Image 1 (cartoon, helix red, strand yellow):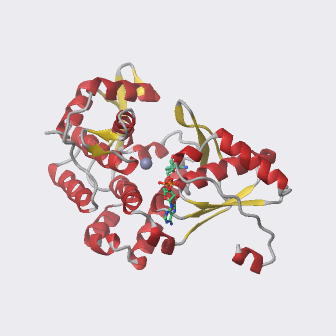
Image 2 (spheres, rainbow, N blue to C red):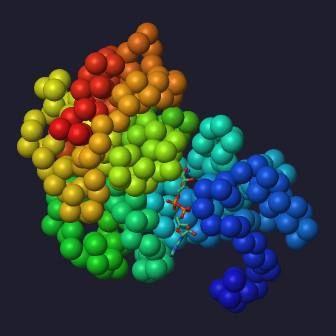
Length: 315
Ligand SMILES: NC(=O)c1ccc[n+]([C@@H]2O[C@H](COP(=O)([O-])OP(=O)(O)OC[C@H]3O[C@@H](n4cnc5c(N)ncnc54)[C@H](O)[C@@H]3O)[C@@H](O)[C@H]2O)c1
Ligand SMILES: [Zn+2]
């Protein structure tokens, strides 16, 4: 607020409650009231200051208020900086479906100040690291090696390493999104780890966020999802054991889970994946790694392969 005032920009702050529960049409409705109350017009700008929830919500309000006004994402979580603030997907949740209501609306600018990450709770920081590992596996072997070399400094949130890692991740995501802004092809590779991951997350959600005794956050589910999906690639001969072990070791060092201590309901997982619209004639669509730094988008994965992969998590 002070820096906006310092350059003679009039600004008004609107605060929303923390957490996913704020990503609703009702909350967006309240924000429209506030924007109108503050007399924002088509020349005004929304500045979204916060994590992915705030940038998704504020970006969506900016996309729809007066048919779209400009917005700037100022991301304060690791997941927000490396993922949610880049790519122009904005939106809110429907009571029955996450991110159902939304719009593609690119921010005019994205600001990521890694010093904000100093106060981020450990679990939230880990969630961001899962997406960082994902970006490295799908696209950038050098980033993967850098992560392996800098685990300790990263976990200590050394600003220099963080700046380097965040910048490389933004480049990777921006590069993919620019090649495929509306998700008709290449952008799908960002789903690595997320097909099984979302299923595990949904199953956990139905039992107080836990699988067995383990808490399953988004980042934890994605880590498990990447292990299961790498297992499918291993069994198909797409990926060797070596890179799979490197992925496993790095996730572990980041404090992310690579196995489950209790079996999950496979039928329930499969039903969720098939419902995710990725199934064509009983075969599922998956982004599978061919090693570290490259993936392939396949649409012929069988339910049997998926079950074996999920079972491998408890082996
Ligand atoms: N638009 C996209 O492309 C995209 C991509 C990935 C995820 N998302 C969305 O992002 C959301 C998740 O974002 P998230 O992981 O940033 O969660 P979040 O926005 O809920 O933030 C996590 C928690 O950290 C707090 N927080 C934020 N910054 C902080 C800081 N600097 N210090 C201390 N606490 C801080 C928040 O108040 C919140 O309690 C989901 O709704 C997801 O759907 C969107
Ligand atoms: Zn994710």
